Length: 264
Ligand SMILES: NC(=O)c1ccc[n+]([C@@H]2O[C@H](COP(=O)([O-])OP(=O)(O)OC[C@H]3O[C@@H](n4cnc5c(N)ncnc54)[C@H](OP(=O)(O)O)[C@@H]3O)[C@@H](O)[C@H]2O)c1
Image (cartoon, helix red, strand yellow):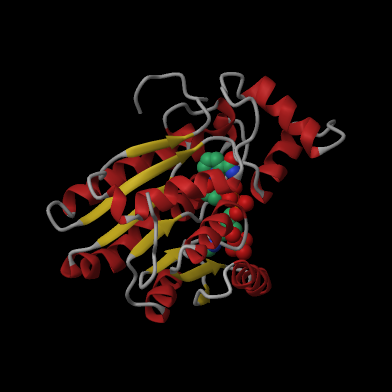
């Protein structure tokens, strides 16, 4: 199998670090004109420099915008009005007792994790469908289908992404545009380092903390380790490639066997 994105433009939201940065790097390495996004200008510039260093031949663009807002989505769309692949990766997660989560926090999770992708799909999908080619990938989570008690607000948004992706896939029926969700499990990123440090403050190193996290909080993991962001990026790249032309409306797991059910 050969995956080549030469001549294709790919937008990865939330790509200044973590899964987004690994995914943008992987796209750039396979020839894509790669568009990075994040809110923080300095982090974004550093991320774009690191992608250019990893893929010197690729064209790398960076658009600073908060994609959780309508204005931010418009900024991205105006800067890059046509993309072949949209990866809705920007997302937030946190641990919180479900009965103590305020309305504002529920809304914030919904705006960042769900509406960001809905708005960008609304902006980009008509063009994709008119050109009869395109890929939209929502980076959901294994918590969408097996929601931990301390992440109900987060898991709810990740479940919503699965419904949104399936609905958009149906809206694009017969056009050559596919819409799918990718469900990572616990992945070693800047965000998860903070999340795990808050859960296990007594750990002496991240390595000790992540082993404790998997043993105590994700004991069903068949990998028995955190997933590396590049391992998630691999599935996102495949799903976004021409090779995945018959996969649409799907929820694709890359969660190390953490979810014990046979099907998502
Ligand atoms: N790590 C895991 O264990 C895991 C597991 C399953 C699913 N996921 C999902 O994978 C995605 C990425 O997770 P991660 O762990 O890589 O996250 P991370 O390390 O916390 O990085 C999040 C990225 O999103 C950007 N971002 C956040 N809010 C944004 C906004 N409103 N507009 C634009 N950019 C925004 C951040 O950039 P700035 O701060 O510079 O804006 C950063 O680049 C998320 O959707 C998450 O739910 C993660």
